[in-house]
Image 1 (cartoon, rainbow, N blue to C red):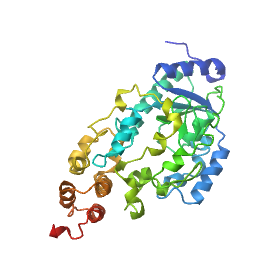
Image 2: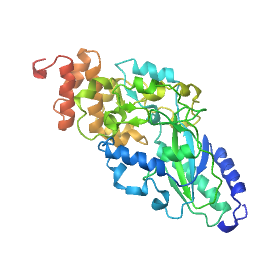
Image 3: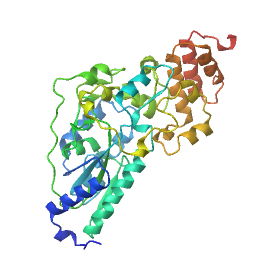
Image 4: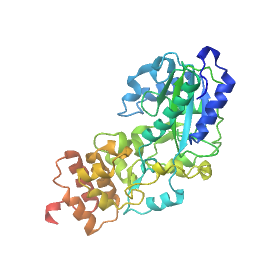
Length: 363
């Protein structure tokens, strides 16, 4: 067991080197370190909130400055260790094939496997154990989308990548197919240089967005975003966006898939991120026929479960409404016409109308 020493005796350069080596040994794809100054990001966040672009995501505003001022969230924080873990489970061409088949369900690739919160948190907690084994009074707190943390601005400052025009983080050696997690610490570590922007004149992500949610370079109106509509939105999906959703039933990867930098993305080495329950190529009708018990069983350990069965059916009903008409689709929709949820019934009714069924009882 290594000899521990108190914080006051820590050698910043050597400790920083050790932490980065430990991170690599734990399988983290990349790691960077930054300070707590997020004044520029805070101003941008306030502007975004003032415009109402966060929609129903009230949690983006309710914590005040805790999100943009790390020392408010965790007093004593001096540095943030930002970590990346790659998750791409399959070639992007395979995802494109699913999107092109209206009979099948497209689910954002990040959620095909085990819930990343658990996987990455466990990895970062292990890194904290190694740090505390070296510095006996090190204060460390792990975050993986579990508190008001500005993970993308922190990652950019830590040199892990830059925030692209689609507002996702981009790395030159890995595109956007990765998760982020953070360790807030009081250790006087050496900071990395911020990443420079390499989007150039490219506007592929803006042009490809099905609902024009990227309203300008680096500006996203979440209220129009399919990821928001299928995951964050609690109520009815606005009719204006339903046709543009196509067969996307949980999230959307379009702006990531078209990004030229993603040709450098690497397939994940994490078995936990490989597809479960055949969700990478499932038939829409088959998923729509899941009852709540089946839904809970098949999504156990997955980030999809937090959606709940009601919104799962809501989203798939829209996708079925967008699919080419068939007797099987109409029959599946009619089976849900008397569902206990008004939300489900509304979207089923809309879907049937898309197939010319205005009076389902007469069919």
